[in-house]
Amino acid sequence: MENIIRLIDKERIILLDCKSKEEVLEKLVDIFVETKIIKEKEYLLGEIQKREKVMSTGIGLGVAVPHARIDCIDDFYMAIAKLEKPIEYGSIDDRPVDLVIMIISPKGSHREYLQILATLVMFIKFKRFREGIDKVKTKDDLYNLFNEINNIFLSK
Image 1: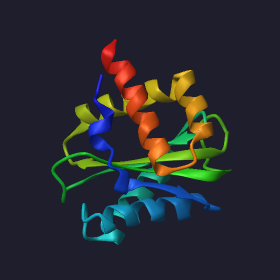
Image 2: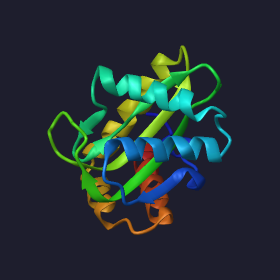
Image 3: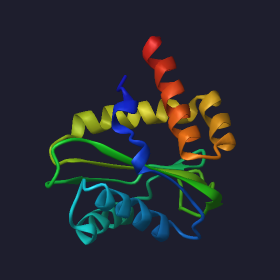
Image 4: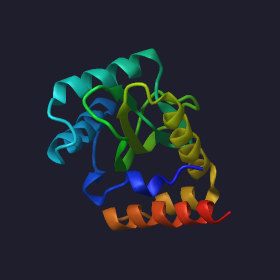
């Protein structure tokens, strides 16, 4: 299992009141620019949108994991948005989304990306995590929830 908390920084967590998938994706890309992970907003946004055109990254249970592999970084990064109100996302289970976890990774990092995604899916399926998401009121709440669940899985 991947240690997810190493990829999460409180600076890259936001609580949002958005009305569309496009707005959420743009806000998450902005976080990577504001925290100086990437320099070119349009490049990353284009890569994220290209991936969404292939197939929606709404993986079910109210969660989406948009992602892109790009050549201007050498590590994995996550930005997370907890939405005040769920939005239509085109998810595989047709449910609206209220948690969006954007992952960017270096090109050629397919295996590690799949490990991270598998760990996130374990989180999402874990009842305690899903119940915790509904109670999140602050960035700290969300960070602490990820940290708590991460520790539970790492201790198994």
